[in-house]
Image (cartoon, rainbow, N blue to C red; front, side, top):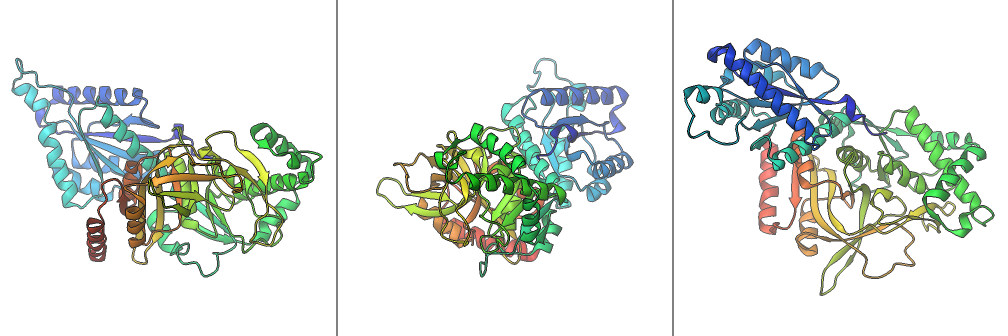
Length: 499
């Protein structure tokens, strides 16, 4: 369900000019190939970096930018000026470039060869001011770009390139992606609504509604034999409670939950959707609210938002794509209740059913419990604790004038005590810098109660993503000060108003 990373590539474009002669240009090309090979072998980059010819004329630059735009496999470009490359040559090409841009400010040599350095060396290795010339024209054109400075063998630089590449993959994946809304928004709720047309213009994905009866019809076509085959997978992968096992009083509920999963998979594939929403207020034709089905679909890379929250469904999908191959996990989440204590204030995050098992600390338990809302039969769900560790909690909202992403760094904790009567997956965390400051800042910014919690990603992934999408980013972390945060909100209001 996640994109095939082997089919994606980033183009490495090296700038120079003909002033220095063919021998220098041959060395420039050789150096570029060596850098690219080293980056590809570093293990930090999830896609392949592709070498393109050294760019030395306005016509060549324009042509390569045009080719990058038209390449279905190119997700972004890395630019580096090995020598001095007069920036007016870049104007026409940069004006049409539509792919994410990373300006890598590096140089081939790590150290100055003090005893042998001469003017030939200086003419060849001019990145220190060649990149400044290029950066000037990027600033003059007001281009959105990521700048990474440092030597190409530096592990921190390689990590940053990998992070930027993952953000570019998510941007690529959302461009033309489809989110399905099964039923409408939860009645009267504001934050899960928004401008779907503007989202498609700004973020690339479309959101369309479908009647829940379409899913219900597909579910009725799933035979018990197919459903029971999936039940065997449940029995193998989870600790299934006795009452749900064959011969137990609730076995038929588990079989129906499997039918929901099979029906949902068929529906999502048929409509070519990468994410979806549902709502407990519209379950016409279903016997239970989808629980385990949603959890397993998220595990496989689908985005999800409850109560019609299409923005969070898209965000969950983007964060799933960004973290392909990384340890940790990502899930739809909701701040549910607080633990105000003298030792450490904490948040208990959960939802009615739908927390992704990629965050599970240990083998989940497959259980059935009543759900006091929705008016349907008891739904089947996976119950588990989210393990301790560092994480980020992100929310995408529509402020009316723009899209805003809020990101809060958090520290996940093991629950202080057992939760024997809480029949859902759950996470406990300390938000940074502390609960009172974090919650106040979140409320000031109008953040949603729905989020995506990630143990796989860092703030920098989402920073690069927001830069590519040209949307506002607000970060709440250990350095957050409410006076400064208030000022940042006001400055952002003015900045986006001027745009």
